[in-house]
Length: 95
Figure (cartoon, helix red, strand yellow):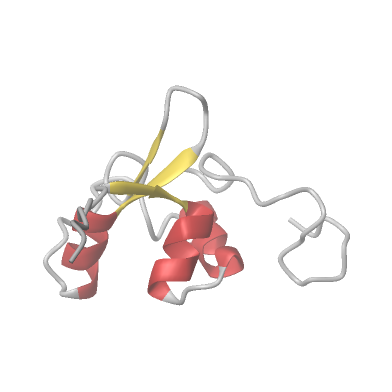
């Protein structure tokens, strides 16, 4: 029997979070853009600029235990969806 090490990361990319949670990448971007999820709480910006979702705080959010945001970020201040995607899916920027 082989040894299998289990690693649990606290922060994951939007793509990995989508795979783990079942939320579409679009839904995640919308939660960030619309201020439902707040930078420094549900997600953080890594030093390389990538947006990382905090799995621990997401779990709290799902269970209704996440601290409420005092002030929401202005729309567009968080993660940005890939350039070839728009909110309505027709390829043009409607924001």
